[in-house]
Image 1 (cartoon, rainbow, N blue to C red):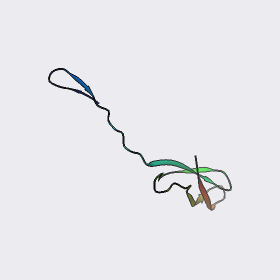
Image 2: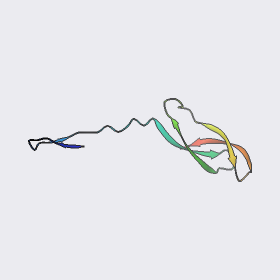
Image 3: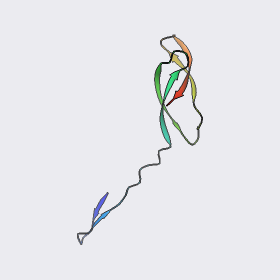
Length: 69
């Protein structure tokens, strides 16, 4: 951010960007390898890899989806 004062001096301020603790992750089906779902997680509260039961259109049933990088 640039600020000009009344004397014509220029000041540069470094604006701190937000502390993004949330990280976007892809969920991959453990059996078929499909990567269908995109979600996010808080790195501080959930450091381990996430696992969810989600619907797999290829198998037409709920399957285990695991976090991938």
